[in-house]
Image 1 (cartoon, rainbow, N blue to C red):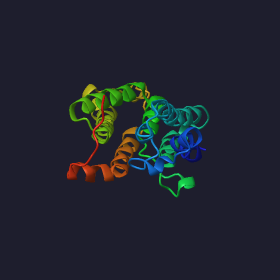
Image 2: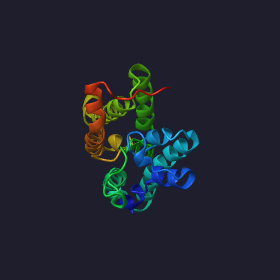
Image 3: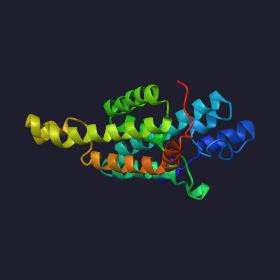
Length: 202
């Protein structure tokens, strides 16, 4: 369920239905909201962003309710579904919106941290790719500190650690997400090196 819901290509479907265009033939060829915006339709881009966030959020909420022991596995599968959808020959989006939806379901604090970091880095460097990679790295580092260093520094008990509401091993899965996000942005990294990466307007 997690993989197949994550693999729904909302950006591709919406642009096909409402504009008749194939978003994969526009701009970067990506199926995410940023590339949908390049079609000139801000509303479709906003809807794509919302739906990509929601599919990550809804999957994890369902998993938390019925399969709490599989929550991290479910998180990884819905993310992989977006990156490598079977319907599109495993060529999907970059996963940032779906990643944010997963974060919202797992930790409101970490999701707000991601948004804040993304906005600050975007204002400074004007690159969506840099913002996404740096923000996911920040979330991982903060999660790692909360999961390991903080309990040691404050001498928290096991019960107190559980009250942070973060699943055990979450920092590990967030590290995997960071690696996958960097992998998904490998073309952007090449563009940054060649100084051909497109800037964003905020």
